[in-house]
Image (cartoon, rainbow, N blue to C red; front, side):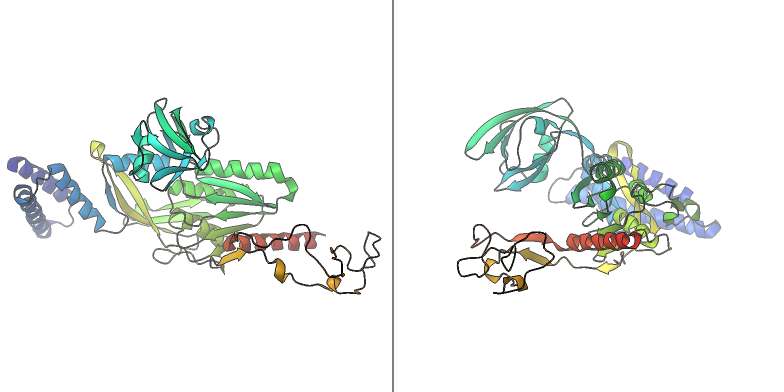
Length: 445
């Protein structure tokens, strides 16, 4: 082993020497220093391997050394062993063999949050709230969520048997795994506003965005008044997808530039003609969990004045990581560049500042029947509105009256109700878009 380690160190020295800086005496000194440091590594490796209190494999020691070398560079450079590399590819590709359910943990069991439409789990009849108690006969209690998810994933066309508890009923369901696409884009309408939530930037993001916008146009037509692009708690993802998403809303101009140690490796990305929003106003929501690729999108749309950015200061991750495969040994994720917004500003350790700062205040709507605000129409003897369409002689028209003429509650009186929580930042974004639409309509009319 000692001889093979020396051979490895000799190879490493040769690689370092060929790429080493300087010439002449300086280069010889660099080579000598490098060789001494690599010998230090070899001596420590042998000492740990021989004398550590428990036996440790050579693979574990080498991986730990590589991991330490990378993590000391910056928080985002890392070593990915084969499993970590495979998991990362699943996340960025956005496809895997699985069942198609969103799950969480509850009382030690896996709980179905929602089956994804047109997936094996959906077709098998799984419902939100179902508890998965066993996976292929193995008790799921005690497994972590990631362990349970890993067991449910597998090769396409392979089977798995789930034991489901639904209320007081327990039954088995056999499901055949299929190719599942991770939904990085979720959408819904909020009145006449299209709400777009991007949870991460994977290979599916651009397609999901364009599909959602097309659906809004079909459903709302000319009534569509704008878009909310929700990037809150979006940790980032693929740079090219961030560029494509931004390009979808811009007609022209720079989107982002990246610069590394070597000037020739610098890149600039520009928008191509075509705005899928057709000029309608956009509000981008960000917060302290918006990082990397989501900051590229927010920063570009803000710099081009294409969107109003609302929320809180973003995370400030302005660096680009390159995945360098190492064959069967996994890969390294290495920070190679910084990125800059179209105005040339680096957001590294700074973040994107919102145009309108709005904290996520905790607002609750509660039933307040006993504190109903009184109006003119509630007063005894109030004049009726002479422009009312209905010929109603009763003063206080439209208000239910009790026997002594005071305003009463319509239908059944509510004595208590569960509070309804409001997404305050989203509510402010919708208010802003509705205000812009109202203003635009008044200008046109």
